[in-house]
Image (cartoon, rainbow, N blue to C red):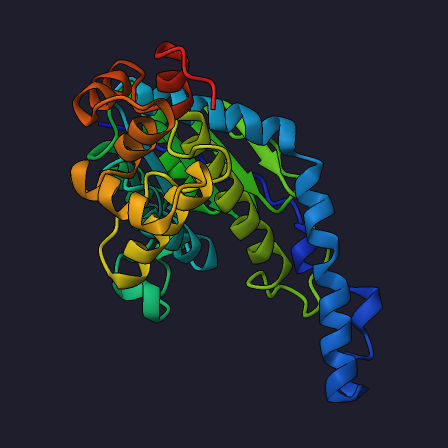
Length: 308
């Protein structure tokens, strides 16, 4: 029977403290309130910047997992869990990733995405059970919690570690210690919220920035972009089909008619069309080069001795 670690000793998170800069916020004009909230939000990017070396470790763990045929899991509750679900969902159309590459586990399940579900985030055993049945050796699991001590998340990370996965924890509490079994701790110190304890504000914004940077950097390392272009985008609607055409035009400098013809000849595969046009090789050859490079356009171009 799996044991779950005892609850972490309570350490006050800065997000729960009163913010001396916003004491008079309820006496201000509408514009004054918004200006004060905006001033607090400006502190978030700098706080994220302080933890980039640790975030880089997490990205490298994720890249290693996905290259090895494994998965990345997100685990969160409340705002953290909702942001994790959003990030995982948006990767599918943006980078055309298989839906099981990034798996989000949200305390309370789908219902908790729309409304609060009482006590689920306080249950470490439920978090452990959630991951024990989902994680495989070689996976990477990233937990997210503003307090740094959410039992559901810590229980899940503990189970993931026992299951042979590497783990990371994004926390809004720089005073919380690294839980046992967590390989990389990413404590983002955004300080006291404009409204004490409202972690949907700066702490949530920080987690959104961290998740977006984490997943985007992972996709770049896996060759899902060429330069700063989304060459793995899945053209599932008119907007995305138009974007695919524009990306090919941007990357090659060819006319839109020529790009449309190339896409048709390459069965709509933007990466194949890129290598085909940039190197002047047949679509079949472009496909072979991309397969050998693991889908990296730049590596496929180098392999063909093509330097656009």
